[in-house]
Length: 135
Image 1 (spheres, rainbow, N blue to C red):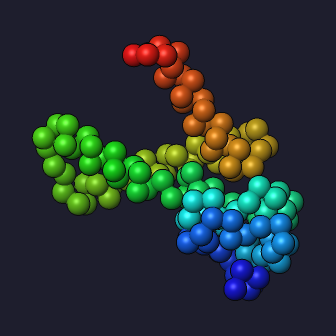
Image 2: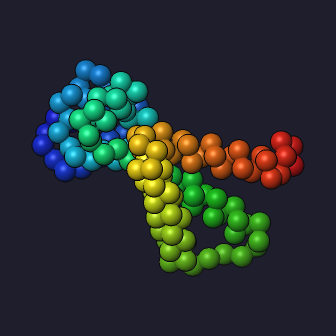
């Protein structure tokens, strides 16, 4: 199934589904990693060389973690949002994150996974600088 001609491939179940042995047969123009780690590093390199657009797992499937954070915020504030408020907030957060990763991808000429890691590591470094190592 991974080698079928398609616009978008969404590996969403297992780690290492796309690997060096099968990545060359992937025909999708876009791969959206909905599972954790469905592409091996070798598959990543093969698909990037084929100019396949990859939305890395750290970005693509971050919605669940983001909503968990929203739940924590609501619990801390003893205030609960309507479902539509959660969806709207999630959409804003995910759109901003995607645009920031895409900007780094384009400006730095790196893969989307590297761009996502650059953004995340940069944010941690900024927070550590602002708040200290042990706030």
